[in-house]
Image 1 (cartoon, rainbow, N blue to C red):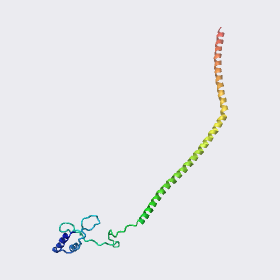
Image 2 (image 1 turned 135 degrees about the vertical axis):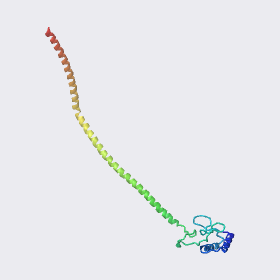
Image 3 (image 1 turned 60 degrees about the vertical axis):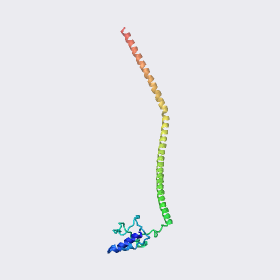
Image 4 (image 1 turned 120 degrees about the horizontal axis):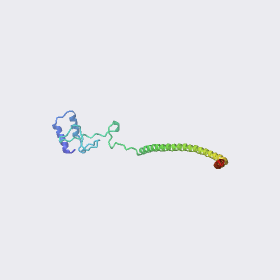
Length: 193
């Protein structure tokens, strides 16, 4: 606040009859040192602030008296000078602990995936062993069937030969039948003469 504004406010103080809170507010305004033009606010605004509802004569909000820095034991707001920077070693340790927990979780998940794959591979190998046993049994049965077929082959050949002979006998029987019919016809002709 400039000296003229301060002089103007102080002059207003003498002219106005104020009581109660207004008097206390004006008293605190008159004690504002001219070296601090504005009071820092927590909201980040650079506009001067004062007691609520107490405008100055020119319509601007009057800045309040600066508060003395309070320690963290009174429950007040820490100032920039009192704020203690966090220990980098503690932050690094905390970060590494959390990173270790994260990596442990990731590795645990990966290990579980590999265990699942291992179990699936074991089950698959057991299934393949069963299929191998079944295929060995099938192969053995096929070999037995081939041996039996080989042992039956001479009999099958004999059956084929018998079938061929039967068909040739059938042809001979047809020829005899036709020949006998011809002879019968000739005999009947001879009888009629």
